[in-house]
Length: 223
Image 1 (cartoon, rainbow, N blue to C red):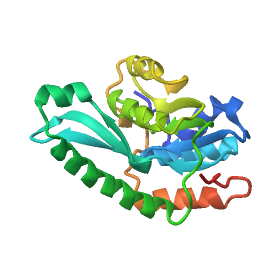
Image 2: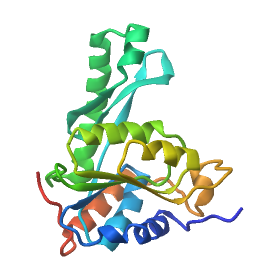
Image 3: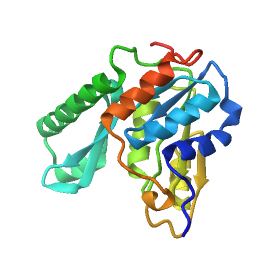
Image 4: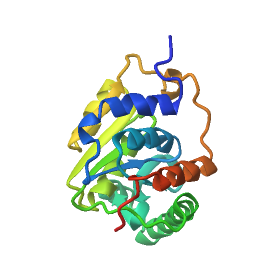
């Protein structure tokens, strides 16, 4: 089975070809999900000539049942809670707060590492292209979208190089547009469709964000 993408940068360039209608628009910002999604998002933002930033999200796992996710926290202190699951399992508020605070602390640490002193981008009223390097199941991306919606963007576009067709269809229900370059059946796994799917280090995420921010005309619009 031949790989569809040489690496994440190639995947980003292919994805950018599907997003040409958003090129050089003042109302568009690209957000990458770390770590691999940022490498893809970098190429998308470069080819579209729009700002790039990072959007972090951390799952909130049910204590003692790590296979169950009761919500998520995201950049900017945003939270998404599955109230039905919390009520069904009678999870105490204090326990939720403790877990959320711990995960938010990790988000804050990574944001300082990735972004440095650069301000966060303005999201309200803008078109946000949310990018990852691939999606195997819908839950993580749906939580990211739900958190992002709290910042009141005008439009949310989820863009990924590869995902199962059924997953793309589920994600599409909660966004304005979904762009998936490849929707193979059988899907198997994200890394199968890349020749090079080596891990992306934190330092690389920082370097890509810094490189894009310093490029003429690519500066991030501050909040």
